[in-house]
Amino acid sequence: MAATNEKNRYRVIGVMSGTSLDGIDIAYCEFNFIAEKWQYKIVTAETIPYNKTWLTRLKELHKQPAFVFPKTDAFYGKYIGQLINTFITKHQLQIDFIASHGHTIFHQPDKGYTAQIGNGANIYAETGITTINDFRVVDVAMGGQGAPLVPIGDELLFNEFDGCLNLGGFSNISFKKEKQRVAFDISPCNMIMNPIANLLGLDYDDEGKLAAQGEINDQLLNQLNALPFYIKMPPKSLGIEWVTEHFWPVVKQYPIPPIDLLATLNKHIVQQIVIIIKANNLKKILTTGGGAFNKLMIDDINAQTQNALIIPDNLLVNYKEALIFGFLGVLRLIKTNNSLTHITGASKDSIGGCIWG
Image 1 (cartoon, rainbow, N blue to C red):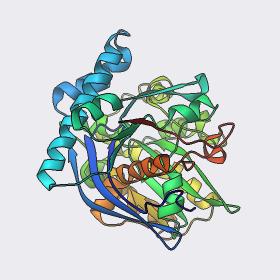
Image 2: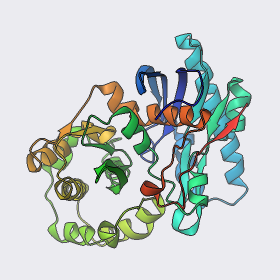
Image 3: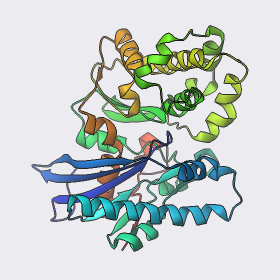
Image 4: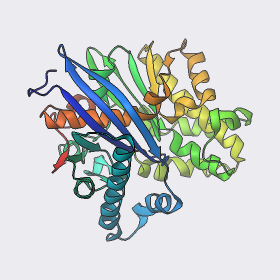
């Protein structure tokens, strides 16, 4: 895929907030187009954890009156802009543009809508730097899932791997099948594990140590594995609404200790991922996201797949999604498709992203 203008080097800040609510990922990345191939580098990156106020706002926003949504969207954009200004000053950076995913509040593509807050106009107003956001809405408007969008980056930046697995709020995967990349969400991941760890006074289950001590509830495990989403064919994606409406009601039928719940949910995630790896004969899978640090989960998957999972350096583990949304911004600027119909199910390929400034 060739660049469509004369510029072949881009200095970008990619911004990402995942459904697991770990914080806002800010990554300064450089992209170079050399010999008909894209090259990348994450130069420096940080995660800014949410304070209690922002955690509450983001967790509760989908339940709030309508006027609260645009207000929070604007304030959150302003907040992102302020964090970026601090990041730029701290690292003395020169930036071409900002590409921000924002934070997903609503995602129901089957009903024709998706919404990521973090207003791009406010980010631009705070920073004075060209900002690109709202990457998903065009694809949804064209009948697609609006997700996953990362696979175009997997294809152009990480195609030496058989597949790319992300273990974030949700687990999702992309890989080549019959010479065409496919991608989809596999299961909820950290967004179901972390709330259970919270019950035990922890932000997350470090390396899966608590889950390793728990007893798996086979009845609950079997009922979760029987959820209809798992046999649905791609394109498909998950949102918090599905977890609230379909996943948690099953879990709540089983009043078991948190440590046993962690063990059961961990095993559920592992089993769903292993099914996909084996069904598609994937041998070498780049694995990123917070779940890559869950030793119990990684070891269990590797034990069943002949060590298919490859964990890169911590910078890429933590910031691959921010990196790729920066790259999606590059594709937007050079007017190259960054959302593909065969992945999302949209009526046609599209160039997603609103440009401010």
